Length: 158
Image 1 (tube, rainbow, N blue to C red):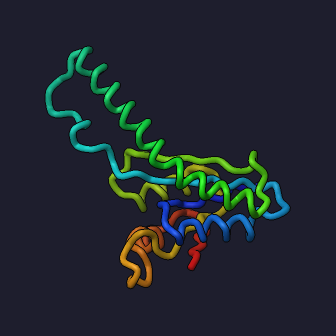
Image 2: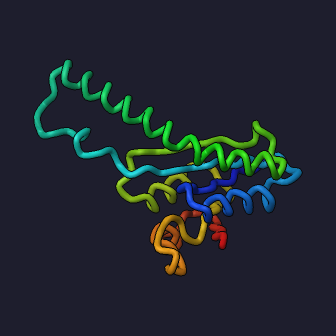
């Protein structure tokens, strides 16, 4: 079994990447697909504001961040559901896919590359362009991943 990392941003091209990964690498196999989404970093109001927090302030901030994190998960649910539906349609068994996301990223491309390098994946599958300008030949994040390298083979889906 090998693990395939598919980077998602909710765009049509990302869903095409999910379909490609499923049909090319998972049909009739025991390979696993990990659907990975990177949210931009925590909003500034959740950052350390320069003073040492009391225990009460630290706990209050943690609660606010927990609520924000849950809201982010709710917002991501339709993206992951659409991708899981594609996997199911192609015949990928439910236990052969999982979702993962991070919300502490300053650089989305670097975060995807870090996950690819450290997660024991065989290949990274990404769309040629996400939600960027449709006139662009290749999106900024995809181009950044290509330039920096993910440490594993990268498959770019049209």
